[in-house]
Image (cartoon, rainbow, N blue to C red; front, side, top):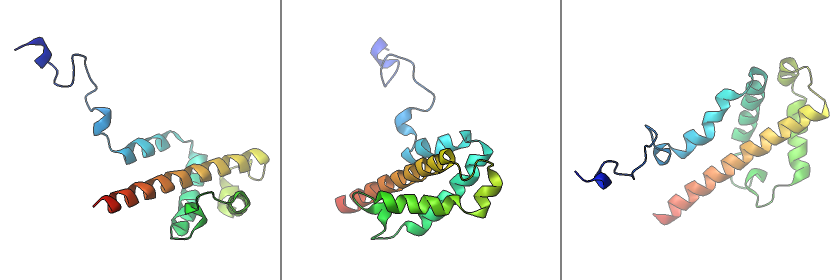
Length: 124
């Protein structure tokens, strides 16, 4: 057997599970296990709100989402009793900024997922 046939994907060692073989969804979701417990509670609340916003015409899917509307949603989210119990910093500008970044990240993930789905549907 020739040396070029030792490794079908090249002559260097590879990971046991090659990166292209890992589903894109798993790559995105796999970092959430690293979140501190307080942040996991916030993430669950953000996901719940985004679940309610996943419909045609939602600001989540606007080409350029309105900053004021996003800030209003984040403010309502930060005022929830559930979040106040999990974090002593609730109400501070840094807490609000953290929640806004997490919310925008979740929106970005869902927008990307929707675009991929629409691309797959249109190519069939």
